[in-house]
Length: 430
Image (cartoon, rainbow, N blue to C red):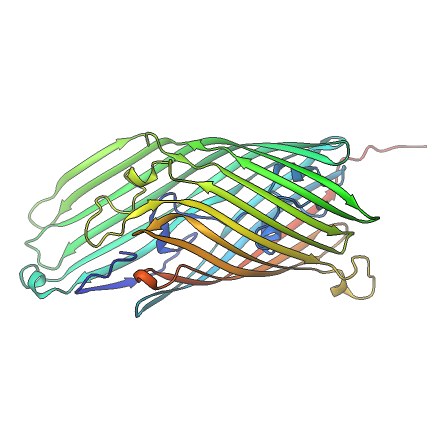
């Protein structure tokens, strides 16, 4: 129902309490989360080429080595999403809040370090319905309503390490484990008690291992500037777990199970992803970065596997889900007036901005889904060393009303707590 306008049908969207909410999450593995922590999101999601010892950058496994060699670092990021939906003359809004990222990093030996954590990879959250108003139908059956709800998330737990060689070349690797649960339910009900209603749905429990590899090479320019090139690659992940699909009818006369199947998601996978980045840094004051990522989902079998195609049976009134190539273009900037100023606090604040354009990994009735937006943010230093609170905003739009698609306009907020401490000091006595 995302893009097909049915005569005699009234559609309504109703947001509830979900970890994330968008009607587009009915498809595939749900709505993919924006990359990185609040620090990355405030710069449009860049970070592949970032080397900044003040922040824990999880966008590239090689970036873990850009750090104080004695530091223990923690980053916790939260999000608050506000979305405004429109389809033809129908409107709706949603507000959701959740935790998106937890990362911990500590040194191993000299120029090497380790990181571990958990982050949200994708989320499913939707609730919509419509009622049939065709007199030729409801004249016999009474009012007929259809509702669809879904919720759940897929997470990445990871552990990785990186090392720097010859002071310029850094490499890193992570072991990833995808896991999560998703529940989708579709219900048709009749006001006339002599007719049985029907309900179908899917309960998905998934597990999938993968790996991620990164590299960064930093070239000094002048006395205090540098240019860094970075690349990252995430392997595909073959799903294991269980998909339970069912359909049953219920009413005052009788109840009956029409269909039931439970089994592993055979041949289903999460796509690999490759990305490159180029960054310029001028001392401890200014930096700029450009990132490009690409991920081909067309061979993942999500479009032919129950539980991922949106509805149990695709037919008139049910949008057709297709797979595509997802890619993104991101540009971010960072500026700190005077990090060592002792008189004016706001000269020590780090200000950020960015812009992005991206294409989603799926199509709806042959229409590609894209999004674009701008980001703003800042890191407020607190206490000593590199401790800080990062806040960010993301203003953007996803899809349009063309082709009777649902347009999303959003104002999303993120907040991150950057914790830094010196743990690994060996006491010495005279």
